[in-house]
Image 1 (cartoon, rainbow, N blue to C red):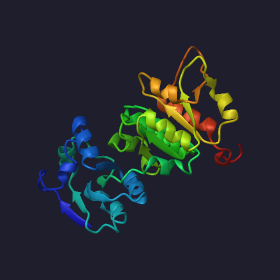
Image 2 (image 1 turned 90 degrees about the vertical axis):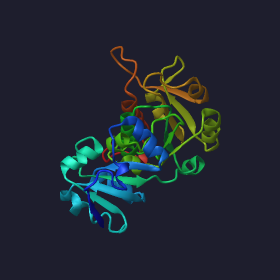
Image 3 (image 1 turned 180 degrees about the vertical axis):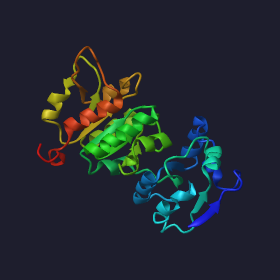
Length: 275
């Protein structure tokens, strides 16, 4: 490893980590600069296993033994090392998860290619809360969907909070961005998917009934936290599906709803032993 002790907070390469508490700066720096921040050795490990390339790493001295074997294949990557107070001044918060890594963003796959062999996909329409995006990816990874499709205005799955909440699963679940519904709906239909919108509607079918005999290929569509699915999404849907609720509650948090629906729709081959 190329180890560089931090003596100057304005040193070349440290700008990737500065002012990480500034939401507006992160939105500009990470997506547009072609980088994302992986936080913790666990997440960095998953990023490297996914084939992502690090630009640099930032950590305290005590975490060097954990990082060294991970970077064996990247001898030219700079590892910035500083004490806790220095790193907090640099990033704006206490770095307690071992390490940060500035990672180069991989090119997103073509949606048609990603759909070709998939059977269950999740479509996120305009979900703006990064915590919800990360939690949905964790449900997708744990409950067996094949991919996630993200609308043009949906929050960035590689935003630092999304990656952290997903426990790094956003780095192992295939995903890509899709166009607006006028182009996305034909793309899904051409690949043989039934577009199932998770929403409230008079003509909605119960998730129990839909899951009892689901189509071979299902694209489950989840909408934004406030307004739910757009009219365009509902118009594109082949089926509107509702989770049965009790006690006058009409809906769940979108991340919770994704877990419930994915559990109900899991393929027989993916069911847990003893089910």
